[in-house]
Image (cartoon, rainbow, N blue to C red; front, side):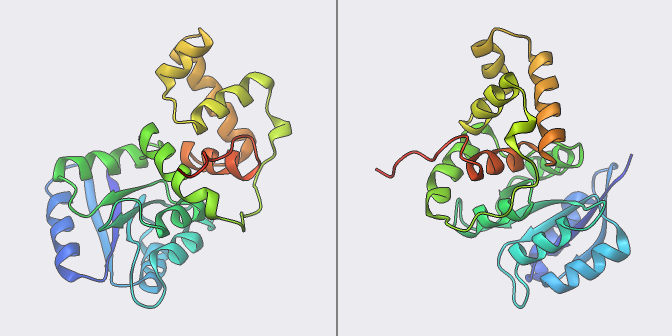
Length: 221
């Protein structure tokens, strides 16, 4: 299956570079380029991409606002946020808006390609340590959480336990070891959590876990 990618960045050189990398792979095709958020939304409606590479800072409608509008639509594409700086403040807002992860713009070509494949396959892009670091740094300063899509009372006690461990940055293997179950069992629990909470991936589940008070950020040092 060919993965359709839309590139949204206000720098033509960045867009061209990413296009060259992606179109050298047989399973990836670039269906459009946008220079701002409004154009990205229009092109997404026309081309129906599987993944959008979205610059976080663009003139007019920025990447965070564009991501929120894109992911609110039916059959929404996955969004990967592009940024120059690791863990800048808008990244958390973008994840809350529905992005499935983020990449630095100096990402290696092979890592860019793999990230798109991972997100297109339905997985979140953030590694557990990155998820923990991002949430610990920014969520404590956020005082206007979005209305949650799902509710924790839909989860079983074991599913709550799994979600808590995910939100604390544990991988499937670490959760399996902690709960003395197989990784397959953990994956089954994760799938059930995503379905019941009406979120698309682990990142969105973690954001919701913090919003609903299941876990709290660590105090600032």
